[in-house]
Length: 97
Image 1 (cartoon, rainbow, N blue to C red):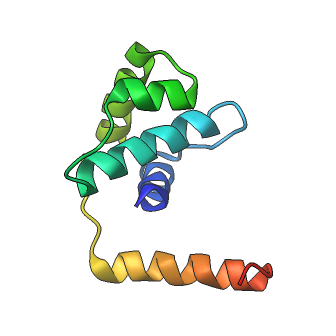
Image 2 (cartoon, one colour; image 1 turned 90 degrees about the horizontal axis):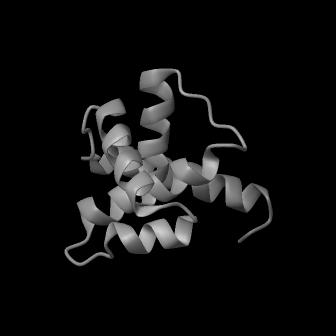
């Protein structure tokens, strides 16, 4: 789910991932995926610690990400399967079977 959210962020906003923002984008996407999909998840303080950012920044990143993707967190099964197939294809192609 997190990869799909990141893709939506990039496509909807002409957002450019860089070495300066990638870890913040990834940890925020993972946080949102966990909150959306799981009934039990860690709080923002946990993700902030893992991501090496302040809790206040994590909270801000979460809100900004949600607005940038228009709160579009639902992923249809066919879209999920498309991304899954692509990931498996890349993994097999790279020898990670």
